[in-house]
Image 1: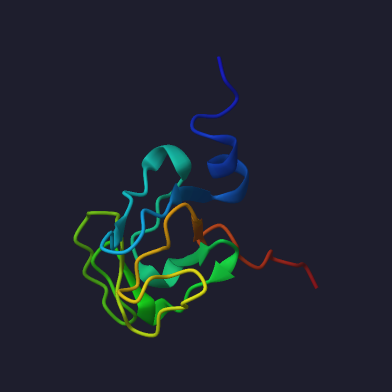
Image 2 (image 1 turned 180 degrees about the vertical axis):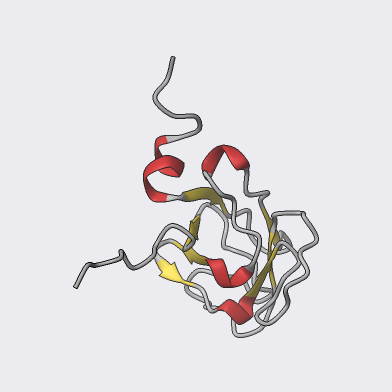
Amino acid sequence: MPLFNGTQQGYYEQSQSFVGAGAGNLTVGPVTTAAFATRPTQQVDIVVFINGIEINKNSYSYNGTNPGDTTPDDSYDILFNNTNPNTNVQAADGSPLAGLTVLFLSLIHLTEPTRPY
């Protein structure tokens, strides 16, 4: 019996990787339960990187939520848009450039430990 389910990347890093498909391919995902002990549902609980460069939260939405929106659509997709794309790693429409790694990182498990005083 395995020690954990899913991938090593998902277990240790609480992350999942995808490969960009180039212009016109705005949707990446879905983020799967196999990669996360607790799959994030809100955009505030994630960070997205393309080839190691953090992408501005205004340049994508996640699971139907944008900053300030708390009503998920349960798609668990990352949907890029053309609001301030980083042209080093994104096409003009916001799509991740072809062949580049898109890293989805959960912030849920990154909490400050409780310290006794």
